[in-house]
Image (cartoon, rainbow, N blue to C red):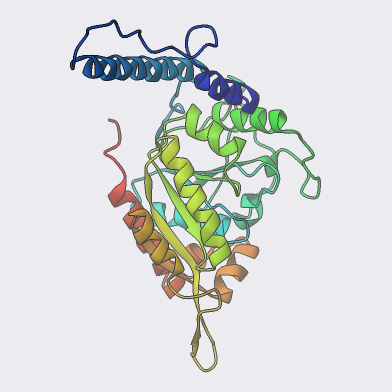
Length: 325
């Protein structure tokens, strides 16, 4: 559903029952004695309970019913409050790591960043999806990963100049009008922020868990916290946090520098009562391999960077609920 309807539901939930007039306290009859205050308290408690029940009913009417994506067992969303923290790079390498850790698992990757799709370049994919006999789009595939992105549907240099409702419609099509086949995991690379796309995905499909990506920088951590709290509000389990670009090691002298700060994400995880799934270093190979369409997990599987992604993928699977049979 769109944001206006969601806001309407929230406003409606705040209205007092009884045609807009706040419920009045019951009159106390003379001579009720000492028990009257307790009666008033019990009556007030029952009114509060009735009001809460009414709010739940109003909100439940406004929310869409969650419907699983056909053929997909578990959905994992990767999100960040702020852009530029390496979320898409992490999503690509984690999707590849999930498949590398267990060759029996089928993995898909959905690029939900309508305005700035980057999965096609990182996964070295071009072209338009074919249509099935049921008029569903077939994902493009590379390195064994089924991929879908708005980048397959528009020209590479064409900007997406759309309002919110059009973006919501595009996300709905990417979720519902794609023939994913049979997937064990669908990794969704979410856009930055806590807006309409995040709410639409969280409310329309059952999400097994969310992973928050952040650098240790203070301004990134502020938004990462908002992202984690948003998923909690919409009842999506937060599996943990990933500290990206945690340390830079000079390739010549091997000196380590914490360019974005040290352990900021770990401190945030303690504050939120969440786990740290792993640390990813700031390494030129991670950037170069993704820019060339050969992510580090595939092109340099024995590197420290690849091992970091493989470990994070294992931690994600360990925290996921038992998938439906």
